[in-house]
Amino acid sequence: MGLSEDIERFESSGKGRGLRARRSFQLGELLFSCPAYTYVLTVNERGNHCDYCFTRKEGLSKCGKCKQAFYCNVECQKGDWPMHKLECSSMCAYGQNWNPSETVRLTARIIAKQKTQTERTQGERFLTVKEFESHLDKLDNEKKELIENDIAALHHYYSKSLHYSDNSALEILFAQVNCNGFTIEDEELSHLGSAIFPDVALMNHSCCPNVIVTYKGTVAEVRAVQEINAGDEIFTSYIDLLYPTEDRNDRLKDSYFFTCDCKECSTKQKDGAKMEIRKLNDPPSAQTVKDMVKYARNVVEEFRRAKHYKTPSELLEICELSMEKMGAVFEESNVYMLHMMYQAMGVCLYMQDWDGALKYGQKIIKPYSKHYPAYSLNVASMWLKLGRLYMGLEKNTAGTKALKKAINIMEIAHGADHHYITEIKKELEH
Image (tube, rainbow, N blue to C red; front, side, top):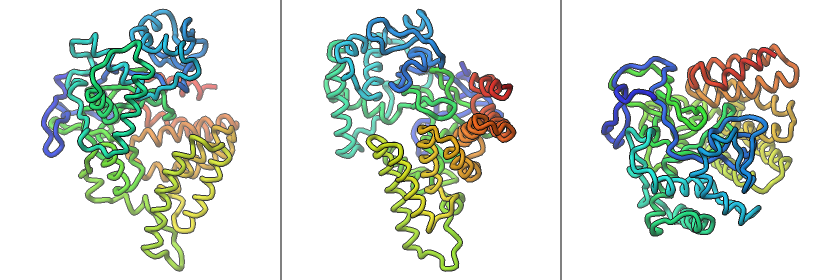
């Protein structure tokens, strides 16, 4: 399980509580693993993954009553029943209209678990769910309103199966989940579900983290991505590290209410390359660059919203037009160009335009490898997508090379015995 004597909870100067190493850890070594306190499979993966153990396989059996939960076997179905029963009859009653958000579903499971679970769970050796920070006093009206909507949805969908305390306690719980929840992703960083991992939530953030969190089913594993010495604080990253310092800190302030003071944020040494401007005979003015950054950040946000209501071809058009506009000022390796290329690649994959997806992926991979830390899941998943695209298009030499590069990173981040790596090695054999 990862030994508690190897790591300890402590008060980190200026950061509050945190975790630190009591011995040294080598690159790729497992510091600890943490079973989920509770978790929920995302609706889009129903039927592809077991609702209980998150195993990905064909021919799962569905719940005979609601027909909306899928399992490997009877053991998994029985294991999930204490949580699935919160939703089963409600799913039957509402049919197609049963659509609480993932946050609401996860929070309902925490409430149910807290009623029956009196002892600390295996995932709460250093931090209990009740100790989570909520930052309720720092929320703006928009965030408070979202919580109110979640509370209303909880009452609407779960009133028959759950009894909860007053709304003020629910406000705190939703704020805690928003701050401390995790998204479980697969090897290509596709979203599989949401979970609560208490001990993992105790780690503080750094933009040059010394550990990485990966998942084996519904267990989080924390591995060293740098050498760690006895006495070192253990740092993970809370956000996507692609973006420049100002952008990263805006994200941290918005979601977690602090500003990062790590080495990367103090020196900003990667910002120049991340924000690369085109070499032109008539270089753009500082104001032109500033305006383009503002445009870029707006288009990132606009695209995020557009995903919910625009068609794939309309989304691709947003990507192409924004890249054309940004390309007048930014180099292709600029992170905002890369962001839109990544979105365009995703749309091409969805539309099964494999050549289009490959074209974007080939442009992304080199700057990704430069901008991200050495053992980044974003870089591994990009090599993996490229490898699978090459193989599908029968470009086997390039495919083999790309898949091997993905494996090199994943053996450190996921551990050499992870089933994802076994699967990729099988792909190499065919």
